Length: 140
Image (cartoon, rainbow, N blue to C red; front, top):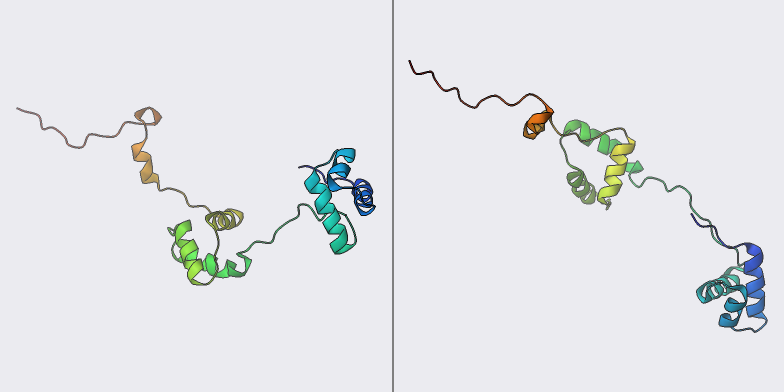
């Protein structure tokens, strides 16, 4: 992750702009982008400081308030799909993306696994070959 420019640089840049130098000239002198000089100057006028905002951090889970309902819903019907849960949450007034629901399920240690019957379509090299569908009766 990239790091923000130092507060010292930001202050020197904004002082030059406040002194009357053009934004483009200051950007060239300090080898920063014109957009950065403009944003720092605006931030200084708006907040009184050119310091950068907080970077990174942790966002709380959107579905934490619906955890109880989701756990009951999945326990009642383990075969429910993520898209199905999205639809039901939308009906409850909680609009979330597919990834949000999937991440919640993953974080709770649950997963939707395919049934063993799906293994029937595997390559014969991966196990015993399937049996014959019909037995041919021996002609006597």
